[in-house]
Length: 133
Image (cartoon, rainbow, N blue to C red; front, side, top):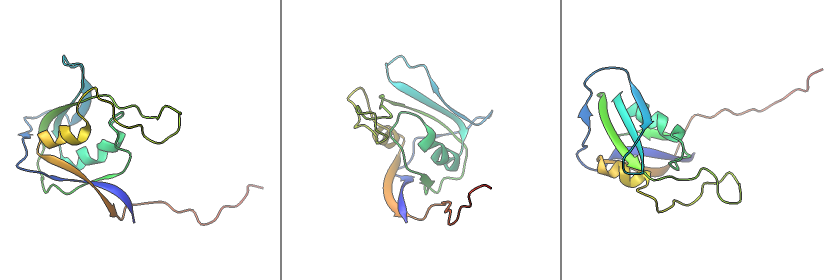
Protein backbone atom coordinates (compact mmCIF):
# COMPACT_ATOMS: atom_id res chain seq x y z
CA UNK A 1 0.00 0.00 0.00
CA UNK A 2 1.23 3.44 -0.87
CA UNK A 3 -0.07 6.99 -0.84
CA UNK A 4 -2.15 8.10 -3.80
CA UNK A 5 -4.86 10.63 -4.53
CA UNK A 6 -8.46 9.72 -5.22
CA UNK A 7 -10.55 12.03 -7.42
CA UNK A 8 -14.11 12.18 -6.04
CA UNK A 9 -17.16 14.42 -6.25
CA UNK A 10 -17.38 17.21 -3.67
CA UNK A 11 -20.81 18.30 -4.91
CA UNK A 12 -22.76 18.31 -8.15
CA UNK A 13 -20.01 18.93 -10.68
CA UNK A 14 -20.02 22.02 -12.90
CA UNK A 15 -18.64 20.18 -15.95
CA UNK A 16 -20.15 20.57 -19.42
CA UNK A 17 -20.91 17.58 -21.62
CA UNK A 18 -18.32 17.50 -24.40
CA UNK A 19 -19.43 19.02 -27.67
CA UNK A 20 -17.07 17.02 -29.91
CA UNK A 21 -13.54 17.07 -31.22
CA UNK A 22 -10.23 15.68 -30.08
CA UNK A 23 -9.63 14.76 -26.47
CA UNK A 24 -7.12 17.29 -25.15
CA UNK A 25 -6.09 18.90 -21.88
CA UNK A 26 -3.55 21.71 -22.25
CA UNK A 27 -2.25 24.94 -20.73
CA UNK A 28 -3.49 28.08 -22.50
CA UNK A 29 -2.90 31.80 -22.16
CA UNK A 30 -4.76 33.49 -19.32
CA UNK A 31 -5.57 37.17 -18.96
CA UNK A 32 -5.56 36.88 -15.13
CA UNK A 33 -1.85 36.08 -14.75
CA UNK A 34 -2.70 32.56 -13.54
CA UNK A 35 -2.07 29.30 -15.39
CA UNK A 36 -5.23 28.15 -17.24
CA UNK A 37 -5.84 24.47 -18.00
CA UNK A 38 -8.46 23.79 -20.70
CA UNK A 39 -9.76 20.25 -21.08
CA UNK A 40 -11.98 19.23 -23.99
CA UNK A 41 -13.78 15.95 -24.64
CA UNK A 42 -11.99 14.22 -21.75
CA UNK A 43 -13.11 11.44 -19.43
CA UNK A 44 -12.51 11.61 -15.69
CA UNK A 45 -10.36 8.46 -15.97
CA UNK A 46 -8.08 10.24 -18.45
CA UNK A 47 -8.07 13.47 -16.42
CA UNK A 48 -7.07 11.55 -13.27
CA UNK A 49 -4.33 9.73 -15.20
CA UNK A 50 -2.91 13.06 -16.48
CA UNK A 51 -2.97 14.99 -13.17
CA UNK A 52 0.43 13.80 -11.85
CA UNK A 53 1.97 14.80 -15.20
CA UNK A 54 0.42 18.29 -15.22
CA UNK A 55 3.59 20.22 -14.45
CA UNK A 56 3.85 22.75 -11.68
CA UNK A 57 0.62 22.02 -9.78
CA UNK A 58 2.10 19.96 -6.95
CA UNK A 59 0.54 16.55 -7.67
CA UNK A 60 3.37 14.02 -7.28
CA UNK A 61 1.30 10.91 -6.43
CA UNK A 62 -0.81 8.67 -8.69
CA UNK A 63 -4.48 9.68 -9.01
CA UNK A 64 -7.40 7.23 -9.23
CA UNK A 65 -10.82 8.31 -10.54
CA UNK A 66 -13.68 7.49 -8.17
CA UNK A 67 -16.12 10.17 -9.35
CA UNK A 68 -18.51 7.69 -10.96
CA UNK A 69 -18.68 10.01 -13.98
CA UNK A 70 -18.54 8.04 -17.23
CA UNK A 71 -19.04 10.72 -19.89
CA UNK A 72 -16.74 13.02 -21.85
CA UNK A 73 -16.52 16.58 -20.52
CA UNK A 74 -15.32 20.10 -21.32
CA UNK A 75 -14.00 22.24 -18.44
CA UNK A 76 -11.24 24.63 -17.46
CA UNK A 77 -9.57 25.84 -14.28
CA UNK A 78 -6.87 28.27 -13.22
CA UNK A 79 -4.04 27.78 -10.75
CA UNK A 80 -1.09 29.79 -9.49
CA UNK A 81 2.47 28.66 -10.12
CA UNK A 82 4.03 26.04 -7.90
CA UNK A 83 7.76 25.33 -8.32
CA UNK A 84 8.65 21.69 -8.95
CA UNK A 85 11.71 21.84 -6.66
CA UNK A 86 12.35 23.35 -3.29
CA UNK A 87 14.87 26.22 -2.97
CA UNK A 88 17.68 23.83 -1.98
CA UNK A 89 17.24 21.98 -5.29
CA UNK A 90 16.06 18.74 -3.72
CA UNK A 91 13.37 16.63 -5.39
CA UNK A 92 10.76 17.22 -2.69
CA UNK A 93 7.96 19.64 -3.60
CA UNK A 94 8.09 23.24 -2.45
CA UNK A 95 5.24 24.69 -0.42
CA UNK A 96 2.64 26.51 -2.54
CA UNK A 97 3.23 30.19 -3.15
CA UNK A 98 0.57 32.90 -2.84
CA UNK A 99 0.28 33.73 -6.54
CA UNK A 100 -3.15 32.13 -7.00
CA UNK A 101 -5.41 29.21 -6.19
CA UNK A 102 -3.89 25.76 -5.80
CA UNK A 103 -5.12 22.66 -7.59
CA UNK A 104 -7.28 21.58 -4.64
CA UNK A 105 -9.33 24.80 -4.58
CA UNK A 106 -9.43 24.98 -8.40
CA UNK A 107 -10.93 21.47 -8.57
CA UNK A 108 -13.34 22.28 -5.73
CA UNK A 109 -14.80 25.06 -7.91
CA UNK A 110 -15.59 22.33 -10.47
CA UNK A 111 -17.25 20.16 -7.82
CA UNK A 112 -14.30 17.75 -7.65
CA UNK A 113 -12.05 16.80 -4.73
CA UNK A 114 -8.65 15.18 -4.38
CA UNK A 115 -8.22 13.10 -1.23
CA UNK A 116 -4.96 11.44 -0.23
CA UNK A 117 -5.37 7.77 0.74
CA UNK A 118 -3.29 4.67 1.25
CA UNK A 119 -4.14 2.23 -1.55
CA UNK A 120 -2.78 -0.45 -3.81
CA UNK A 121 -1.18 0.96 -6.96
CA UNK A 122 0.60 -0.89 -9.75
CA UNK A 123 4.35 -1.17 -9.23
CA UNK A 124 7.32 -2.97 -10.72
CA UNK A 125 9.59 -4.89 -8.35
CA UNK A 126 13.04 -6.07 -9.42
CA UNK A 127 14.08 -9.07 -7.35
CA UNK A 128 17.26 -10.08 -9.20
CA UNK A 129 19.94 -8.53 -11.43
CA UNK A 130 22.80 -10.22 -13.23
CA UNK A 131 25.93 -8.35 -14.25
CA UNK A 132 26.59 -8.42 -17.97
CA UNK A 133 29.44 -10.69 -19.01
